[in-house]
Amino acid sequence: MAEIRENQELHMTNVLSMRKRVTAQDLQQEMERIGHFVKSNGLRRIGPKVTATFAVAMENGRQIMDVEVLIPLDRPFDPPEGCVYKPLFRLVNAVTIQHIGNPATLQDTYNTLLAYIQEHQLQAITPGYNVAVQEVETPDKIDQLIVDVYIGVSHNIL
Image 1: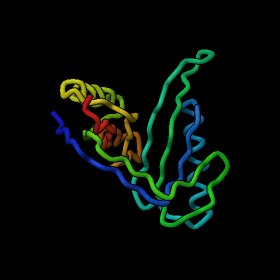
Image 2: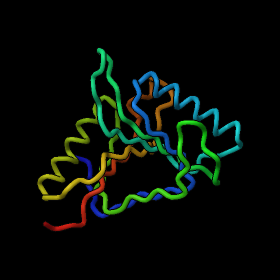
Image 3: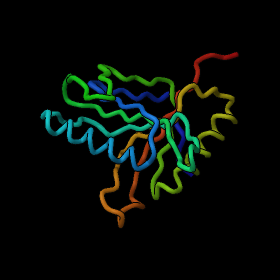
Image 4: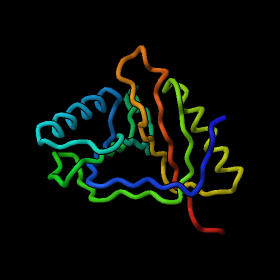
């Protein structure tokens, strides 16, 4: 069983943020576009990519995700179309768990964390933020994915 930690924080500076409703294929294209922007502007990523999924829906037989991608860069920049520059991203008072393995089982890791939140009577106030600690470069290494999941919880006691 993966260790769950409370009172964790996630900080990033000079963040390129893109939030859109997209299909998985559209998201891949957007990631390529963002990668091209970073490279062509001489920017450098200074931390892991972070993603958050706010909602998933079926529309016209296609799965549409409301997703945000956050990429910390080495300096301020003017964002490309459809993106926003965030000088600072700070998530505090989060519970975290680390997922190691195939992304197909990431939902199991989420279920473990959500059960912990419920058992400890915590109130989730953010979606899960997936921090790519170790990305998968090729399909044969898919079981080597490492993702830290952060969910912000309320400080309030009601």
